Length: 37
Length: 265
Image 1 (cartoon, rainbow over the protein chains, first blue to last red):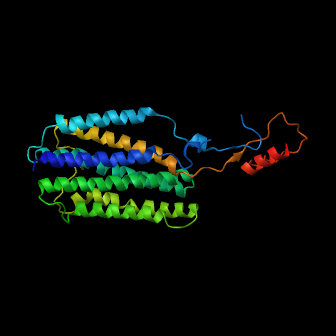
Image 2: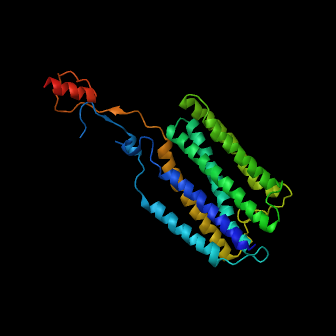
Image 3: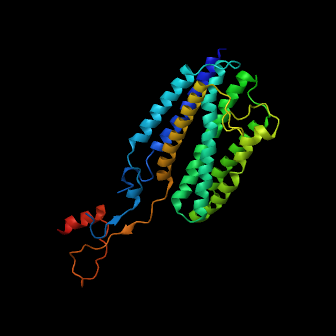
């Protein structure tokens, strides 16, 4: 199998992990939109 | 304008300020890192294209080290009674570090399969890194154990300080013991990096992208995790006569109150 396949899997995995952090980080604080009011 | 009886939560000041700059810069640096790592940097003379996994494997491990250093610093701040935000920062740092450690292990496993021929071996670097992951998973689990928030924070702080001892063990494992894993490329005792300039540029750019993304996550996550501060009642308005006794806060109007008001009107 081409080494590029493993490289692609590695980079996609990395992107998926960071996408997970991005989603968690973008979640609103408890209380949602009104939390700061 | 604040009305009598109205409460003002200081949570408003803790809301993340809109700083699109950090996200934008992170995205641009990440894109540059991907181009450098996948297209510009040359393939390794011995390992070929598989070596390109280094540009995600090494920054993952370094980001994990830094995240655990954040846990350490925040834990010290908690013990110095600096406030609940530091406890939130410690938890966020552990969350980031655990994910980055797991990512480094998996990336290393893929790379190892290509150049060593095995997915896993009982090598000191691999084992100490797996222990690091388990320790901080335990830290996050321990944070969920029941107890008063102040007590949990202090207990976790002691744990966060103690666990950091494993980080130098992981880093120096390739120097202390005979190992299959290669020695450090950049953080070497002699500070002479045996790496081609373009490879070094790709590695440092990728590292910058990871650090920026980690900083972005920590900033957002602390705001999510830090408990809301105690709401402070707003003082009565200045136009009220001084000799007038302070009015009690207006009762909360419910649906039944409104119905009663309408029927009595």
